[in-house]
Structures are given as structure tokens and as C-alpha cells.
Length: 404
Image (cartoon, rainbow, N blue to C red; front, top):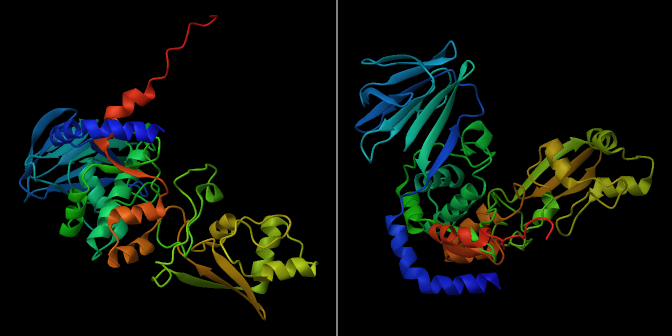
């Protein structure tokens, strides 16, 4: 198998790869900020030391921690003003901390958004009457920021480690999502939630402890490390929700999340609302007693793909989207003129169950054991390992000229 051949080579090359990791500069990610809103002006300040300001590639000065620069769009070009600087008519601004440990603080005056801080640099370009904001940030700093936003506070160190690996892996797998827009990933749920610089020492320690580690499949290809809040006791095969089969995203029983905060949910509709929705959306006939019984009293033993055994088929993933349910894992019970949907889990159910993983970490499982519980037949490798084998795996045999 490919994985055995490559892993045997890795054993021989491990000392070389470890040295290479020590001297490799952390790769940079380009993250589009605040893409869910129209930003017409920002105020940027230095969080430590000062930050240099470059206009169309030329350094124009520095702004200290006690000052700030306000950036707006005027006639399709950028205008930046601070106590010491006045820059007008430029196509791009770059704000860069001077100190290696420095960072930027950013406020959006026209909104109630809390101030955010960012490591790396901030690129600002005009988009009609609005601003495009891109944070160019080291991958490890980005990973720590994502873990802080996605995982929250006061979790076990092993949980932070596994979340760091999965967030880093997900970022590299999806880093082409926004390339036509001038960046790689956005900071919202479309990619991964990212609110800037991580301020939690426990998370930073976990990211450092797993530095550069990513998940790959048996062919040493980086995986889609999807995760969700709570699976309700059973995860889902990738092809049951999306169109593509992935050998590492297999349905698995998970008893660890059953008593977690998002393990159960309930939604009540009137009988008319429920049947009316099914009739309008799927053309469900309501004159047949067997059909009515199937959609009014439905209790799946395991996760289903469709509601009851009725025709036409009713995909549960569409029901979840239409009715804004927490998951597709639910039962239906008719109670007089009401219909009660009693559900389990929160999220799409594919891959890692966050609340199950939290419980496993508290019970003493290592982060590697937890990752292998949710992702089938995967391996943890250094990013430098992927770079080393990239050319070897990407180069097919030389094809003969056409006609031969």
C-alpha cells in the first residue's frame, strides 16, 4: 500500500524532516475579514509598539499605540488619516507591525462590533464604496484564533490539541475557496470562524504542542476534517449528506456526547403547519391514512436519510434546512392539534463531534485517540512531510506524443 511505502521512507528521513521543520518559515494564510457585512471605514491601531503603513508598496510612515489611522473610500480610492499622516488616492494600504511580537487592533465605527486584534499584516483595498480587508497571518496564529472562536474557553488541553489539528487541516484543505476574491479563506462559518488573535494561553500551548501536524488519509492526502457541535449519538457518512464518498468520514456510534448541552432539542408545530409544509414542498398526499401515520408518528432507531417510508421521498437534510432544525436526527409525534419534533444533536453530523470529543478528553483519552475515533484510517503527519512528497505524488508517468 502507498501509506506503508511512504511511512517506511519517513522513518529513514525523519531526522532530515525534523531539521527542515525547525528552519521552515511558517506559511502564511490570507483571510478575508467581515465578509458578512459592508465595511465603509475602519480604524486601525497598533497593539504593541508601532505599525508601519505602506501605500501602494511604498512606506509612508508609522502609527504608534497611542494613535490610529482611519481608512475610508473616496471616489474609488483609499484615504487614510491619522494624527501624523494624510494619505489619499491609493489602491492598496498595508499595515504591518514593526515588532515581531506586535499586533494590530481594528474597530469598525459604523457598527457595534467589538474591537478585534490581529497578528500578521492587514491589507486594505477599495471595493466600489466599501473596503476589502485581508489579514495575512501565519498559519499557526490563524489556527489558534480559529480554535478560540470555534471551541470556546476552559476546555481540556487534549481537546484543544485535537481541535488545533482539525482546524489546521481544514484550513489547508479549503485554502482555495476564495482565491477569485483575492484571499484564501473567510472568517465566517463558510470557512471557519476566526475573530483574530488568540488570547488564551491554554489554546496557544495546544497549538504549539501540535505545531504543523495535519491529518491525511491512507494515500497521504490531506483530509476534509469536518466537525460539528453534537452528533446525537451517531455520526453520518459523508455521502449521506454530501455527494462524495470519503473513506475517513464514516458513520460511527458515539455515546460520549449523549448528556452534553446540545444533545437534545425540541420544536413544536401545529398539525396544519407540519402537513401543509410537507404537502407544499413535496406534494405529499394527506388522504391516505398510512401516509399520515408515517409522517405524524415517526421514530427512527438510527439516523435516516428520509422521513418515514413514504412516496415521494422526503430528504431529512432538506427538512432541517427549511425548518431551521438543529439536526436531521429527530422523531415526530402527533399530540392533538400539535406535532412535536424531538431531536438529537446539533449540526450536520459528519466527522468530529465536538461535545463528544470534549467528554473523551475529560475521561483521559489522548487527542490522537479521539481523532482516530471520529476519522477512520487517518494519519498524523507534519506539513513538511506533505511538501516533501508533493512532487513525487503529483508527477504522473510521461505520456507518449499523440499518435504513438
